[in-house]
Amino acid sequence: MTRLHALGLSLGLSSLLGATGCAHQAPQAEAPSTPSSGGEIATLERRIASAKTSLHGGVSRSASSEAAPASAPSAAGSGPYGRCDAVCQAAAEICTCHRRICALADDLKDGRSADSCRRSQRDCEDAGKGCAACGG
Amino acid sequence: MRRLIGPALRLGSLLGALLLLPLSTVGCQRAASGLLGGGAGESTEAVLVALSEARAWQRRADLLLLDGDLPGAIHSVQEVLQIPFPANAPEAEDVRLDAHLRLARLHLRTGGEEGEKKALAEVEKGRKIATRDSFFRAHLENVAADVFRARGERVTDPTEKKEAQRQELEAHERHIAIDKRLLRTLLNLPPEPTKGDGR
Image 1: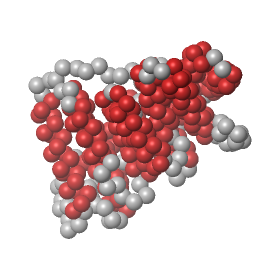
Image 2 (image 1 turned 180 degrees about the vertical axis):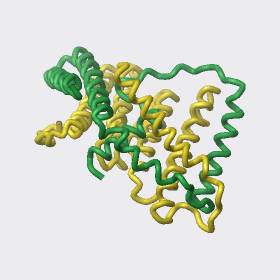
Image 3 (image 1 turned 90 degrees about the horizontal axis):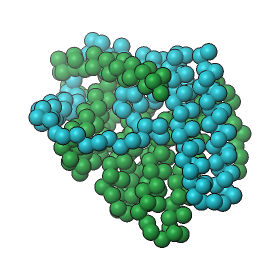
């Protein structure tokens, strides 16, 4: 597996699993419980039990099992659209970190933090250029 | 931001569909042994089943959180780490990193010094299993930064506060370093020469 394919797989799983990062870090507000959540939990628990049975001792291959994984890496990161999406996600995260680093440097008021702020500003600018140029 | 989110949702839908399609037929046929340790076809299906189980535990955690059951949600996400993926399945690392990431965030929500310690312990577990750069790996540093930020806001001693802020800044630096390497990979650029500070 190439580095890019491994990265593509990560990106796809990131979407699938709903991972969050620097650019998406607002905590979720607690929503009131819905009457159907108990039913959905029961459904999920049946699915989990079924998966455990399959993994540990029970289910043979399905007819369509070969369809999925080969598609995932290319769909997620290797095509120009997915690749640029990832480039711009990384750029957005770098710039979010840059803003926080510079806010901290304002508080810390020392040379090392100021250097870090300047470096991160360059990183943000470079990453932004990479995003803007991607796929164009 | 719309440019970022739209494709991500489509990718999620695509992978979700890919995941659900084969699983709709799983369970129709019984065999003598489980999927783990089987041939290539069984291994492929085992990955899909394991991914489905991970998604179910994560969704269960979502629902428990809606009910305000934070300990239940933590337990649910911990179960993801027990899922036996086939050996050498590259998906396993991302799924486990995602679980450590979420556990760290959930522990942080419990609040106080204890929550921060547990969150940092999860971050460290994630760092240890990571074998390559990924957004999951980068986001672990984001959680570390959040922990130090919370610590900086909690402590009253100026020296401790400053130390927490410094640690938060360093976590952001590590996050940027990983994202920069990811960018170079995505843009097919050679790795940056290593410097003294690892950036």
